[in-house]
Length: 127
Image (cartoon, rainbow, N blue to C red; front, side, top):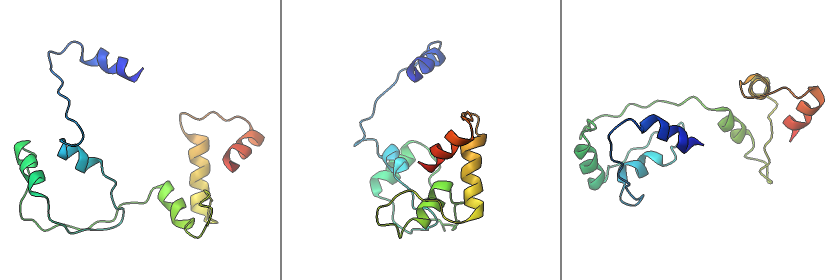
């Protein structure tokens, strides 16, 4: 279904699509790695990655001073932070009013959710 929509979008353009296997596509591999939230890491960029950035004209700067920032935690990160002591690693909702309200609003108010009734909604959220 998703591929069909993309084909509809690009069918009128004269283009070639080149596939780069994961091992040789250094830029995509680097960009798709999991980030370390709320941490600042200092590291040297691999020489191959620097060359790839330059080749793609990504405006790569060789010698810069990095600025530190803290990403706003997502709901999932908030929940995982509070479940570190859980030996079974079950998803649990901490007794933090702000997080409970956020979970309920996400389950209830999103454009893709349908309210199944209070009893079923309770049991769905309990799972």
